[in-house]
Length: 143
Image (cartoon, rainbow, N blue to C red; front, side, top):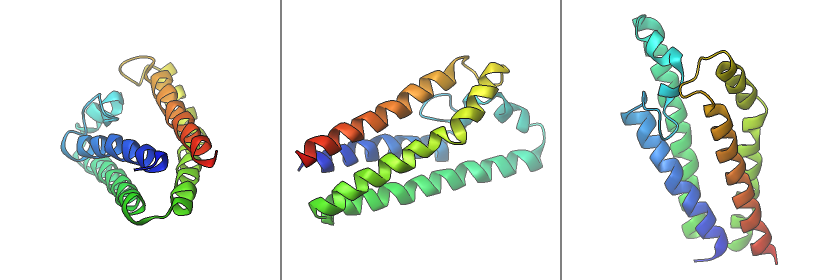
């Protein structure tokens, strides 16, 4: 197994954990569960809103599942060039977090809508670690 496959596999394992949390314990405050958003509990007061939010959570889990299934195919069947471009695509797609999601969660965190307080910073650090990790893997593979 080469460094690209290892990097993609580690990401796949972490994302699989996130998917399991979203499908089976979405209200969790670990594993990127939506329980960190105070609105999750508030939505339970309105069944229509809560069902809509659950639908979106499961939709995200399904999209993540597509990602990791494709990653597994690349790990098993992809040649090195395909794996390199997969890592580049993962870096770009993960960077998109900073475009819309990060500004939103920072605002919610500042307004006290996130528990635990400061979660947005922890999430930002985690996403940055993914990007750095993939970048290191990419550089090592290219040298």
